Length: 291
Image 1: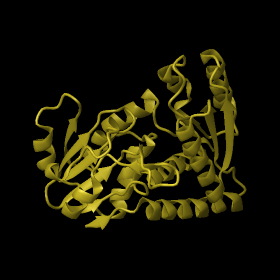
Image 2: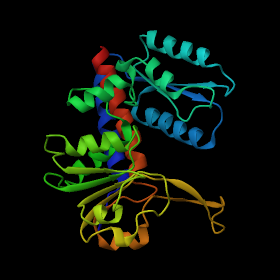
Image 3: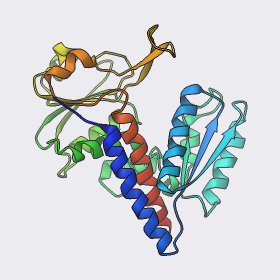
């Protein structure tokens, strides 16, 4: 069993981007600028945005964090996004989800210029993914594919089960794994809450991507020997033994499943760092595309 070390691969990607930024500076060109919008003070969102801003600093990107009260009106938030769309100095825009209930996620995503949609959520970029056209791929699936490529995990001709059908992870992941290229060409089953015989489907799969937000859902009896396991889940669960009072758990029962695997991602330290690395790659690409 080999750990798919997202921390290691993310660091390599950021080091490479750092050299790319230095080259832009040497040429007198503009460096990438990521604008992050944080609505309210959700603890998890604060942590995620802080990690993204820190990554920008490490690489040499410019970043702007725009904090907005959770009482902000939808129209005012949409106006802020339009200002960022029109700002030629801003290359990438991300609005940290989830948003307050009175604001439509869909309207906010639609408001972002697809050329600056480095999260890859806009329907234009989602459509390009389906068509196999160049565009921004949702950061978590993009990061997973970069991780598989780094470790030379074979996907061609493999059976893959993606458990979870969100527009952010599950659906784009199924498209990437089935795409007609050297890093795809898997036969993919996209599973969800109404899937029958889920255990049997997983047992017949060479690759399992667990992205449903249920800690420890994938058990050892659902995994065949030699399978590749990608655990996207990360949930806080009470743990009296921790100073913080909680522990982070993935969607896979790591202790029981890992001995059966050829490759597996840990939680934390697997998919999470790769999501940020992919976001940075998208931001760099946005900058290059706009100049």
